[in-house]
Length: 374
Ligand SMILES: Cc1cc2nc3c(=O)[nH]c(=O)nc-3n(C[C@H](O)[C@H](O)[C@H](O)COP(=O)(O)OP(=O)(O)OC[C@H]3O[C@@H](n4cnc5c(N)ncnc54)[C@H](O)[C@@H]3O)c2cc1C
Image 1 (cartoon, rainbow, N blue to C red):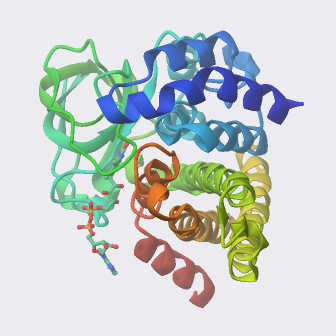
Image 2 (cartoon, rainbow, N blue to C red):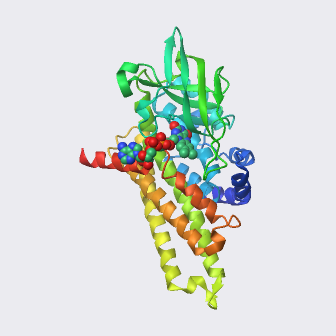
Image 3 (spheres, rainbow, N blue to C red):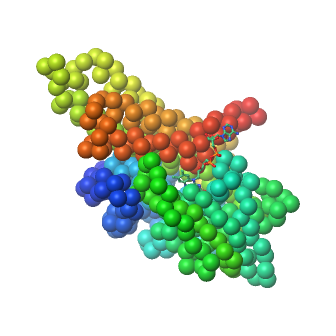
């Protein structure tokens, strides 16, 4: 029922806007409003904070179905989760109560600001500083590549509070767009997910109350990594959705397109491509759903030893599958697939990011190997 409901909304409201949003590189404001009206914009927020209280698998299904028609729009539910999981995992009940209801009501989105220009895969090398001053912290630095920066009202920001302590000297904070000293760089000009703004978040003497620290001093990096264990699964979901959209389109096309006097779908060479695409997609989906079940158990306090492995494996398998499947979809449409008259070229461009963000697939393989070998 959940899938039917979100698919109907996605096909009716989001899909018709996807090509123009990509072409014009515009945040899909109307789609955000439609998601909020149907309560699909941040489904993971627990009921006690006014949210829909969806479990991790339900969140995956929502993201998957939105990504099936528009990957950029799927970053609304996905990044709302990414920005707020640090609070759900580590924040005081006061801090959760101060921010989560606003997200649940759709009054503001939440972004996640870990990366910097010189600190990507090696995120602990960050330079953004937060210095204690009485009951406040003063933040200075520039976060790079922040999804939905500028449109989000709220930001989880990781910053160094103790430069002598390495990763254990990093703390996490909630920063608001409205805080004095917060500004944003220009939109990055990207290959894909062009309707999702990616900007730097510039922090110049941003003074915030110490109560906006998420968890204890020095736990920010641990929280940032623990968050990714849950949210890499949402990137897997995004990849599955993009791949499903491309496969569905290609299947329809090969049944219609005629060459040599018959539908190209009648040729065995084409059929084998379709079979491989569907097989790889379903394998990645089952791994992602298994990872989501583990994420849900871990969120409720059950120790899940292999969550890190499963979330990295799901993200890697699904994103690699999405890149292959979307590329094959373009191939199946021939010259038409290479044009913007059909959605598969956008899906191929959109798929690429899923192999890069929330940790590149090389980093995921390092994470998986470390789990196996330890
Ligand atoms: C569109 C977009 C949106 C993003 N959104 C966010 C966001 O909302 N919040 C946020 O904090 N960040 C965000 N990011 C940042 C993203 O997570 C980083 O780009 C990513 O982690 C890679 O970091 P990097 O770009 O600095 O690449 P680098 O770390 O410089 O890596 C370059 C290459 O080297 C490889 N490499 C690096 N180290 C190793 C190693 N040890 N072994 C093998 N290979 C290695 C990488 O795999 C990659 O292929 C976003 C990025 C993009 C492009």
